[in-house]
Length: 175
Image 1 (cartoon, rainbow, N blue to C red):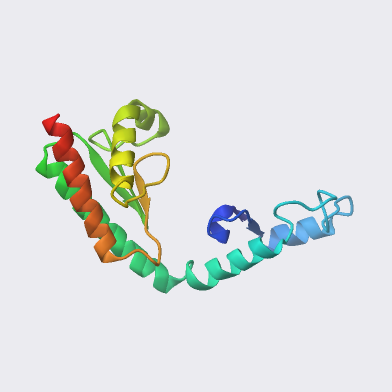
Image 2 (cartoon, rainbow, N blue to C red; image 1 turned 135 degrees about the vertical axis):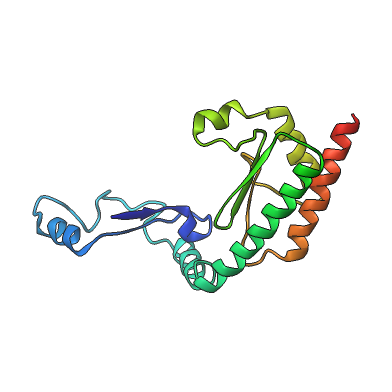
């Protein structure tokens, strides 16, 4: 069984699930379930036009092998540029990549679980980097120091992050 939320709609409220044939057959044999409208009233995820359009666009243009190949290539470039800045400034930080997601943390080695990640957090430093980067046209996720590559991300944008990230560190070290 698999479930997926807003990612399948490109961030728009949407959801989907998938079942193996065996599980679907088992559920389908149950007579006590109302599988047509389990909530009884519909709702945000009940097939509204915006969610359906966003899901279709995401499945056709974003969640494709071709798109992922490009996004992962850019994430590798982002990871390398970020690591180069961290190493050049001798920072005890780390950068991790998972597919098209890259995140840097204020710990080395990189945290391996939520507890270690929380211990490595520095709200003031994180806020500084977010504002510094945002004021120069680079947006990270509103939590962590995480960048998500998209099919629209360019090499120039990835390279610009490394330049601006480096400038942020230089200013911080001078302060």
